[in-house]
Length: 174
Image (tube, rainbow, N blue to C red; front, top):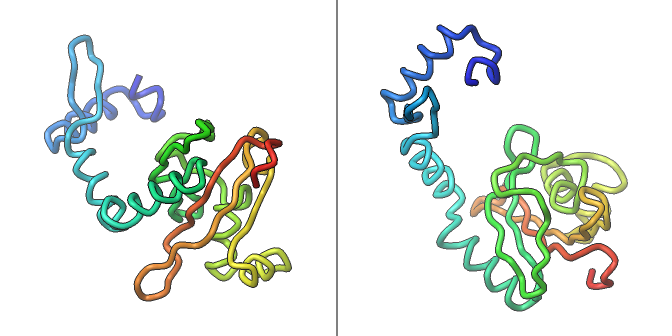
């Protein structure tokens, strides 16, 4: 299955898997099955610390979800896409079907548009988002959702991502 998914020759895939297992990134299970190893969790934790997710962003998302009653998320810019790193469910129970860690396009959805605007992209929409300081979309990235997003800045002023609230599209809450 590893060879199939990676389109590598079976001996090459097995050799790479064994190398990754020695480093703790994969674990061999009975029957020739592989799963992610503990080193992947360590990498994930280091990645999250780079954004200070647990100490700064997560408490802010909890407060935002509690006060608004809607799901709050933090998206980071990674390799030309936005990635949801955290999500806190609001009292309304609505959550977007996209998962934490799933890369999403920047050109769809409020969070993506905000990231584009505050990382210097040009155009009338980008200018309007910068002027307003936030952006709202309905059914753009997900036909079932409406969202509002604002930029999140690092200590030195660079945009590291966007925070957003999501509601079911059509419920009139945005």
